[in-house]
Length: 322
Image (cartoon, rainbow, N blue to C red):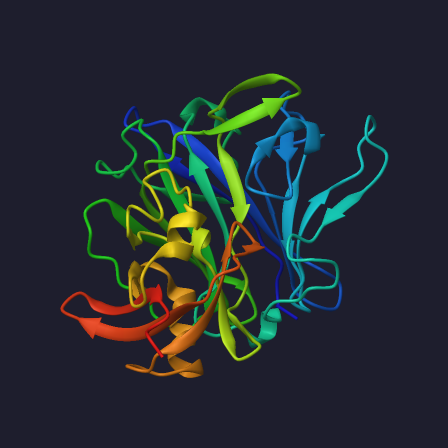
């Protein structure tokens, strides 16, 4: 258990020197460290819309006044919708299935992915500053009024930040959020500006800010490494298989010749992929069980870890000829 409990609100500074709220993080629990993150307050007039998939369909969505994400000492990561006067029931959602667990907090070592946010509407980031504030100063290449994204990871205090050398990205670190536990916020520009939604027969475009839990540790199932392709960041995709709107053309993928390239992704942009180095090693072709938006894809792929002048990368392709 941590020697002290924390409660910190994280803000970023826009081009007009306004402090804009991102999230509040709390370390709580009587006998163990637990971590909770909220993105609004009970006093807000706006609502939280939750859906199990990444496809926005309001008919299948849960709409509540307030929501938060919790990372528990046993490794469970949950969306929680607390009880309110107008919503007396408490709802918990485990996006990876009931009973699923990730890395326990006291076993986390190098940068366990937690959650990510997309900021499109700066004006929605409104909560007033308080005394326990982490303020990210103005970043002229990112906080321009245009969309950006931030990815949050938990890691042991002894590990250095992942490398970031691009002008349009920045890493901010918060120390001691739990025993031996630090947090990093990886901020970068984003092309995401909303998504399609459907309400009955009505269709439209939702450009509200978005929060997602980042996918859990890589697992091996039936001797294949399981990876959700849609959760990968900054991928050089084969454009005829995955287009610039992250839509997968499964028919083309299934008809692609053996050894066709599918994608290339650098590990420095996806720190959790370093797990593959320990699971498989470099320059060894391995079976890959792909998912896309948490759904299994009925197609066989292979992966390989290699290095070039930019660093280590994962190459994804179709299965070679027998």
